[in-house]
Amino acid sequence: MNAPLTEKTCGFADSQAVAAKLAALSHPARIEILRHLSASRSCCCREVVDHLDLAQSTVSQHLKILVEAGLVRYQPDRQRSRYEVDSDALEDVSASLAALVNSCCSGR
Amino acid sequence: MNAPLTEKTCGFADSQAVAAKLAALSHPARIEILRHLSASRSCCCREVVDHLDLAQSTVSQHLKILVEAGLVRYQPDRQRSRYEVDSDALEDVSASLAALVNSCCSGR
DNA sequence: ATCGTCTATCGCCGATAGACGATGAACGCT
DNA sequence: AGCGTTCATCGTCTATCGGCGATAGACGAT
Image (tube, rainbow over all chains, first blue to last red; front, top):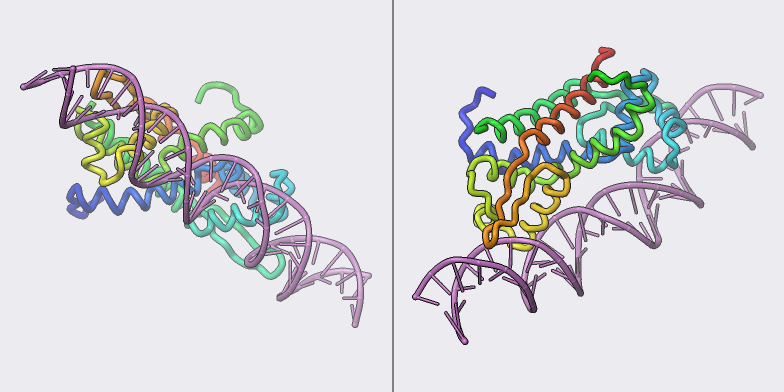
């Protein structure tokens, strides 16, 4: 955080960005998916389906949401697509939330 | 993190709890509300309405969601209800997310 | 060439979220 | 008593979410 941010620039646009990231994380299935992706390195869709007891189409949707949020990297490897957690992006979200919380609790 | 958590106990039930908290934070208006509540100490609904350019009923709804998620304390003070950020709860959420992210990035 | 497998996408649905206006209750003030 | 203010709730509308089955494309294996 080095740019001189006024209350305006910090507040409005940023809230939307953070909210979008958090929205992608605000579903138990997607959290479960993230856990599984990080645990096993393989990361094809089918494996997640087996692990999660949801229809394949549903899992594919959740994966798409995670990819669009930038939290998971996607590589359409011929047959078995590979999904991989984007650790940096994930840490970014965590840091953003921490910053928000911190700014909310500073005047304590 | 002191209790002996297996992967099972950590995974399933917990995902839902974390997801619920994050869901409450996954809307720009609610983040904006949190910012405003922490900035100004006064915390009545009307003030948030002025600041936010949303209908009073809408703001009331968002506040209710934050209260039900346990992130904001609510005290029906006669006329002017008082809303106040629950810093501890907020830090809990941040910590939960950090733990999740950490467990996802540990094997890096 | 054909079959089986794995994906992504489409269409459909029920449920929920998010917004609003209207309403009524509680309260302070004159 | 009457008025203005504040707030929570209700009803309504629309858009989106979350789930599923079905389908089509791409590929490996036989």
